Length: 117
Image (cartoon, one colour):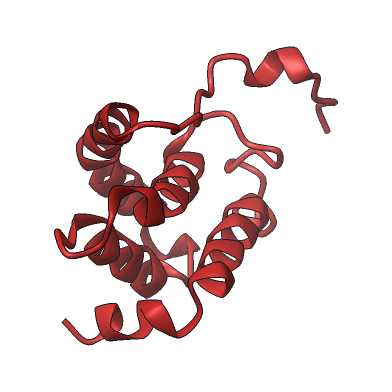
């Protein structure tokens, strides 16, 4: 298995400290998320979670700074640079699942209505 260095992650920029940055990152999620979900196919069991997070991210009633953590989690999911490469059989998506689970836990019951839409 490849050893990772901080330099491996220099291209991954998930620093969202303004609404303008958030809008750029949200656009990137819009561009790349669905092709990643299609590509993963039946390899992941957390597609419903991804969909709920996407709905939350698109909800205009939620402040951008509340959505920033969701955008960061979804960007990690779509990023080609992972702690555990997605091509690894069985365990390739564990890091993605961990990040998505952490975001869901952070949001708590606030995310529940977005599963029902």
